[in-house]
Image: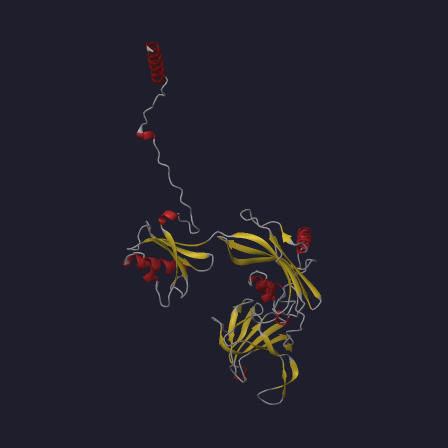
Length: 429
C-alpha cells in the first residue's frame, strides 16, 4: 500500500513540475500599442451615419416658416437669419411650400426631452434636396440622392387610354407623357382608338429602391389606326433626337395641340359651322378644346409673340410667329403666362396662357388656330415638316442601334441596365 502512495506522489510531482516548465509565456501588453475598434455606422442617402440620430420625416404645414423648423432643432435667431440670407442669395430660396417634405435627426436617448441634431433636409423633389448642416459652421448645399438607371420594356393595347394601359401594368404614367411628346407630330393622342397598340423600351430612375422618375424612351413602336410609327433615340457629338428607321427626324417643328395632356375637341375646323352665339353659319377656322378653367396652354413651337392683349370677341389672345410659313393663335384665355408680351421669344412647351372664357363665348374653352402662309389650316390634319435627318457620317452607328432595339422590342425582357450600379432583368408586364 505504501508503495502505491509513493507512485502517486511521484506522478503528481512530475506533472506539476512539467506544467510549470511548459506554461506559455505571458507577454505584457503596453497600452500604447492598443487601438480602439471603431463601430461601423451605415450611411444614409443624405450622407449621414446612423449615430447622428434617428431620421424623422415631416411635412410643412400651412403658413409654417423656415424660422420655425430651424428653431425647433435648437438654432439661434442670429444663425437662422444668416441661413435665410444665404439660401436667398445662393439658391434663390425664399419660402417653404405647404406639404413640402423635410427630414431631421432626433438624437438618441432623448424620449422625454426631444432634441435634434443641427441638420435640416428640405426636399425639392423625390430626388433633389437642400441640405442645411450647422454642426460646425453654416453649410448649405443643393444636392440629389444617388440614382440608378434600369431599362424596362412595356407593350400594350389601348382599351381606353394610353395612361390607363401603362398604369394597369405597373409602369409610370411618365412613360405616356414621353411617348406623347415623341409621337406628337404623327399621332393625335387625343383620339386614340381601341385596338391601337404600342411597344417601348425606356429608362427608369431608381433611388434607395424606389422609382423616382422616367428617363428617355430609347425605342418605341406605335400602331395607330393601322399605321406603324417607329422612333429610335440617337445621340452623338453633333446631333441628338428621335429618328425613324431610315434616320429621318420624326419630331416636327410644331406640336399637334397646345396642351401637355389630352383635352377633348369640342368643335372642329369647319367652314360652315353654325355659331352658337350669333345663330348663323360662320366659318370656324380653328379647333376648340373643352379644357377646365385655368388649364395651362403651351406654345406649339419656338417663335416670337406678335400679339398679346385683350381683343374684343377674341378675348385675351396670344399669337406666335414660328417661322416664315407658320403662325398660331390662342383665343379666349383666362390670363397670360409669366412675362408673356409682344416681342418675347418663346420655346416649344412654354406656358403662354390659361384656358378661360373671355370674349364672345358660351363656355370655357380654348380656340386654337394654325396659319400656313397667313391662311388658316386644319391643325388636326395638316402634314407638318420634319426636322433634319441624321448626317451621313452617323448612319453606320445609327443602323447598329436600330438593329439592336428592333431585336429587343421583339423580346419578352431586357437583359441589362445602362450603368454598372444597377443590373435588373425586367420582364414584360
